[in-house]
Structure formats: structure tokens, C-alpha cells
Length: 148
Image 1: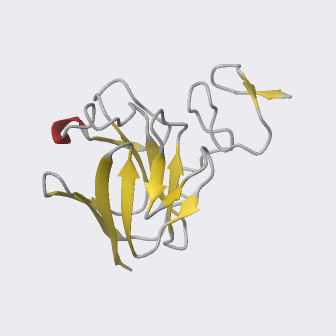
Image 2: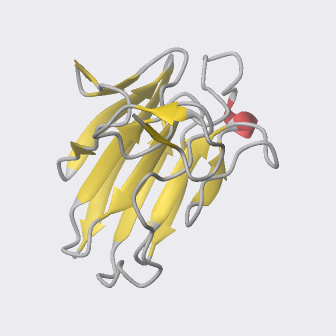
């Protein structure tokens, strides 16, 4: 059995992120995200829209300053009632592949992550369609991949 390079916890082979600390178990290449894109996450209950631009990775969670993931930009959903809706501090990771494909990964959240009506397995990237309803705990978001 191998150990996490960040916290030294034992890890199960085949996982992308440590179940204990959430750190990546595969090397993060800083320039691997070369495809530019624009996407939107809309918080349905508040009708707030968050625009995501450029290549990258976004950590969806709550409580600014308490959650991080190497190479990811943190999106704090606290202003939209995340705590009351069961969103974990480090709930899910939204990534764009070098080809411009969107993926969502549940980070072993307490209350689960769904894409449309499919519950995601922790630490397994799930391909997002161009539009999808995402549920983090009880918080419902609408995803729309606008470009390319």
C-alpha cells in the first residue's frame, strides 16, 4: 500500500486524491490546462451566476481559508447558504482537461455529489455534459459550458 506524499496517510491504489487530506496523488502539471473556455455555474436558489474563465481547476466548497487543493481556485459557496444545504468545506473539484472537456469529482463529501440524477463515486472524475444540473448535498447548481 502506498502513502500520500502530503500527509503520509495510507492510500488506495487508483485514487486521484488522498481521502484524508485531499491532496493530489498524481503530479500536477501547472501548464497542462492550455484550452481556454468559459463556463457558468448558477446557484438556483439564489439565482447567482458564477463565471469561470480560462483553463483550470476549481474547488467547490464553503468557508474561505479552510479549504485548499494544490493548483485549484477555491469557490466559496457560503454566501449562498452552503452550510445549511450540506455542502462540505472541500466538496467537489471541477476541472477542464487539456482538450477542453469538463469533469466533476466528488472529494468524499459528507452529503454527496450528483450530476443530473447520477451520484458520483468519490475521487472518480465524471464527465460533465455541456449543460447539467449539479447537486452538492442539497444545493442545486446549473452548469453550462459556454465555449469553446
